[in-house]
Image: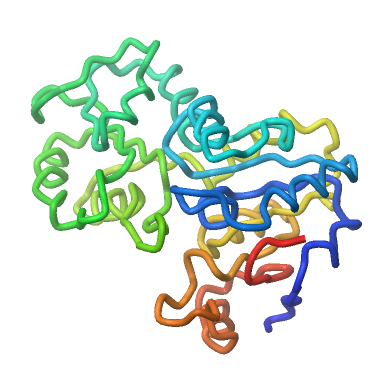
Length: 281
């Protein structure tokens, strides 16, 4: 499959790597619970004196995500830290000189301006910057946001997209994300700055926290060709695609058909080093 190697278990290749940069949504959890086998994977990596760094496009600060993982029952000792697109967003907003912002996203994501000198606008007047963390819930559609985006774009404020994902699996359902709104905003003439995978800034932030800098000993694990695997390709890192995530066939209990996956890889020209159905050791 485009030179990608199919794995049954992570144990087939773990000896080749010392650092595992692992996605959260679609790999470790589904937004509601930890997947079966994940604690075993992380425990085995820990016992082998190898390190796990979670890298996620969740539009929340790292400390917020750590609390969520603890609530899911994930032991904090099993990973080094969480690197999130929300954290990168907050760090970027801290450096910017804008004052008036418009937030597209649920109230829980408003912590992205906590401790910063921003004033939230209730209408489109005076907006200098849009902070886009994504839609509210399961029933949201892009159409619901088009009037808002079309109103905002008239004065050309910069949009900060804190989650480049266009869609994610929550529980057993697909929901749209901030990246889809950002894509539409660009299509109508708006300017967008993206924070998260596959863009370089989140990887550079991650490298600062890793003492061992040999990229040959790092493995990126994720379920998105467009974000996880493209990001790994851009960074010249080996990658493992989990196929029972965002690319899974919702009408099949067998994940995604190999022929369909092969066609998708060919179409996108984004090639993982390995692929596996679920992350198991």
